Length: 93
Image (cartoon, rainbow, N blue to C red; front, side):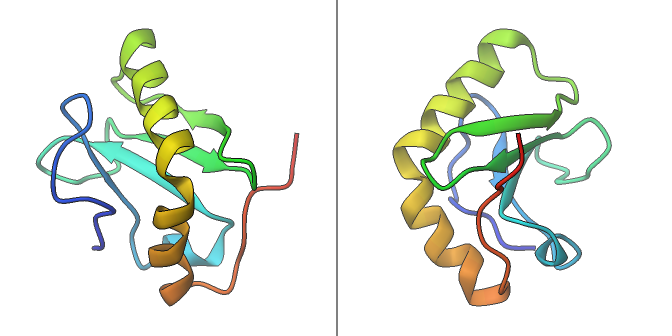
């Protein structure tokens, strides 16, 4: 399961799984167990903004911090994503 970064952001690892690559680019945020149970899911747009599809156990402050982090780093995260997926950024509303 690829982690975008080895360090945690706001106490959570940011990652995707082999099952994720059939969808557009997104980021899961989870604790050390790296399970989707309790994890948040952020769909990433081409400008780095995100849509929270699932908030998991994250509070509003944690979500905002992670969204800001994704916005600042989405291009380098996308470089990793595209090594495993032919699907691009989220284009919905």
